[in-house]
Image (cartoon, rainbow, N blue to C red):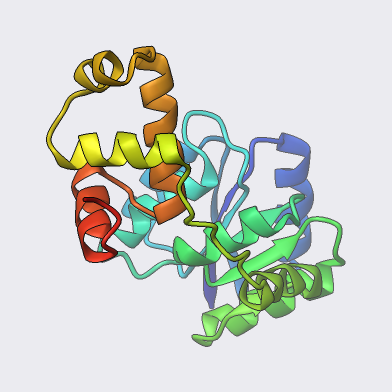
Length: 209
C-alpha cells in the first residue's frame, strides 16, 4: 500500500483528487492539508511514502517545504502537482529534491502512473516539465564581455587599493552612487560575487596597475 499526504490550498482540488486516488486499491490518503506549514508537519508526523505538493501554498510555498524536507532525514518522496510549467519552477523543484513534477492539466491516469513510479524509487516528469528541464541543460550561455571602460578600470584600481566608495568618488570627482553603479557593473563583467573575489580576479587577470 502506498501512503499519501495531499497538500493543496483548494478544497475542491483536494476532494477531487482524494476521491479519484482512493479508488485505486494500492493507494491510501492519510491526510489532506491546505498550507505549507501543515504539509511539513503532516509529513514529519505521519511519514507517508509520498507527498503530493502544490507550489503556491499559504504560509510556506511548496518549494520551501521541499527545501526543509531535503535538509532532514525524512524518507518521504515529493511529487509536485502544479499548474506552473515554466522552466524556473521545474528546475528549482528538481534541484530542491522533488522526485516528480506533474502538471494539473494531465489526466488522473498519468498522476497515478507518476505515483507508482516514484513509489518504486524512480522519478517522473510530465512531458512538458521534462522539456523545460532539458531546455536548462541545452541553453548556450551568452559570452560575457569582461572588457572594462577607462572609468571602470580607474574604479577597479581604487577598489584593489582598498579605497571605500566615498574615497573613490572624491578621487575621481564623481558621486558615490556612480561609484556603486561602476562597482556592480565591474562585478557583473568579471563574474565576481564579492569584493574579495573581485580583487582576486583583478589580480589574477592582470587588470590593475
